[in-house]
Length: 448
Image 1 (cartoon, rainbow, N blue to C red):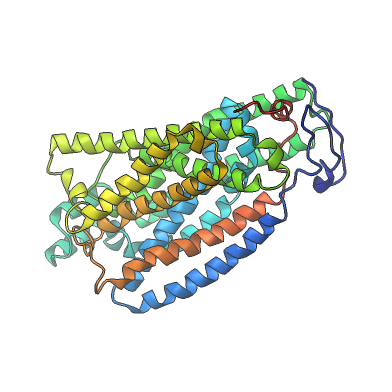
Image 2 (cartoon, rainbow, N blue to C red; image 1 turned 135 degrees about the horizontal axis):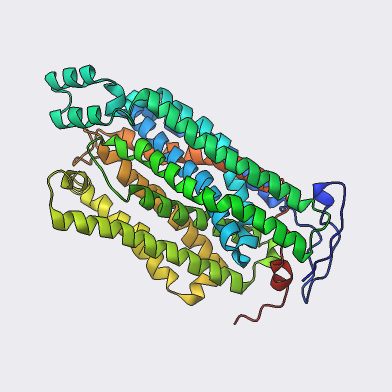
């Protein structure tokens, strides 16, 4: 179906003239409503408050270490949104579908924060020796000297020395440069073409749509494969190597699905909140919201399957080299956190998303997606903190008040990320009219 198109000199005016595509009328403007700017300013307030509350933790016993670990959690959540947004954007270009018309701008806005996340990485890189054993003992001699001083075990020294090619301070910088450089290059072309498509004078014709679709598919197909490989490397180096003796053949896939879990939750939350005003109020019909809820449910099930399958295989194998990683997260009080993680991350989303009515209810979906974002952060806490000797099989709060930095620091980091995400969201129209699904989504919704 050919869609009418009118060119204007400025992006803000590109869709300022109301047009009629079907029973519903195209909104007068497709730009983000003013409330997005209010959300953006609130993020600065949240950042300031969270930062002030973090300062005392720097002066308690063990506090600086916990602040750095909590910062790593905040960084990984930010990387989840930026990198995962890029991956899901490429997946949409390859697969097509109406869901992409609603989520494309939020996903683009997430991906365009990649440079912010790259800057967030710098404190971790400069302070890596305070997080990673292999960085603190950066060569074979230093590792064996630490063994003789009873600072690390012989197993840790042997494993760290065997992995020097991938796990060394120099490799750490090079790997990060490759990850952010390649992702940034892919993002550059996707964003460049997205702007060119918006300004295409033949927009609305089937020929224009097919030409742009082919162009995006040709990059996004290989781009997804490249993303999976490099994201796996990042997940291994940044998180799995906190315990240098741990290894998992599906670690990267677990993080990939976890990214989809969080990114889709944030995307759905964004479009539902935006639907309080135009233009998203017109485009987010009950049918599309229900479809997005089912898509989210699929990621929840896949997340459950991957994590439980690995646990079941390791539990049944009972191999001494594998079980300590789980024992560190179950014994010494960690069983409470493990059980809560299971309930928060899997049971609650799975149970609630079974409901057809809930997936169609905006208010309930807002609460559920917020909960899922919290659950993902909680799961990262369970993955990160027990890697350290003073925390493994030893969860306690009394005399260990620095652990509360896991609340304030990630909030501060994510507030900064959200500020730039919302800034990006305000810069472009929320709907791309050069899409044949526009006419379909302006039809009357017959969903019951």
